[in-house]
Image: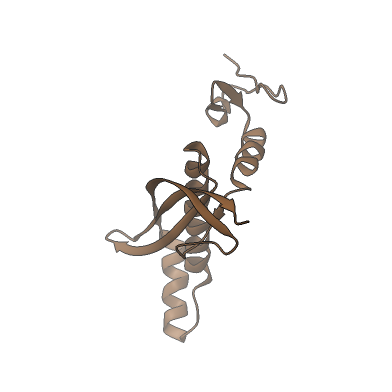
Length: 150
């Protein structure tokens, strides 16, 4: 059974059906879901400090955390081992960590939007190493509603 994007009308095939996403009772193809997601998170400010210059906290909404676990994979392990041997940086590991951080911060922004906030303050990022060549990233912060100071 084919699924149809309720935004652009794109139809799925039986092999791409799983790529379609239901968000707030509406079905989105991958492209439209990405546009929707980016529009939702674009207005959410995020900072590691307890305040944002020029704004005051009108309402504290919730403390939220996002957890991401990334497998390093054989290629990353091999290139990382070679890099370590020569004392160089491991680009494969760095790219995975950068992508994990971006994904976690975007997820935190999305959650803030869903809960009625327009900013996340006091954000903290923690990395941990698991066995089996996995790295964890935990990002947490306080979702708030801020208004410009007068």
